[in-house]
Length: 183
Picture 1 (cartoon, helix red, strand yellow):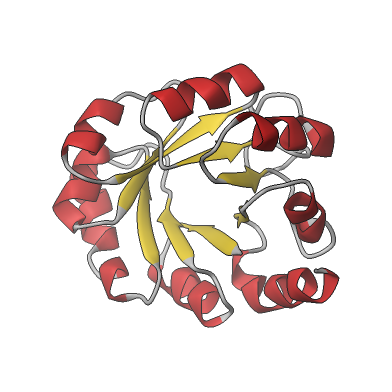
Picture 2 (tube, rainbow, N blue to C red):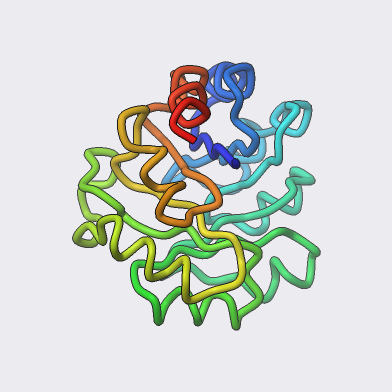
């Protein structure tokens, strides 16, 4: 099971990895590439797959394992040319299939539930929408949006290969324990 911790700083990333996160995604919306690179310099030292959100050039400069791009972001071809893992967001089966055809390594599906972390998010797709996406593609699907220790296992049961958390990143150990106990 992959636990993606979406973080803004190294301290939260360390806490998440110590708690069982296997992927750490550095996400600082609107941060210039140079500043993002400076913030992310120590992330490759973590014992986790390192993903940069939205910024292909920062991911390359940092030697990150991959980049995650939202539905409106550009740079997928550049990421693939650079040999990065490519995560693409999808809120529907059609978008998930398009992501797979575009060469995505995984799909970030959601939001599953409403989330205060992204007030401009699309309407929630729920567990049924997640299950439909999981059945429609052959690449791993990572559920995101409103996920915490009370509902993460439901996402795995719906077919997700993992879950991504923002607010629950610092409580990764409890989240991991809940998922393991439920499955």
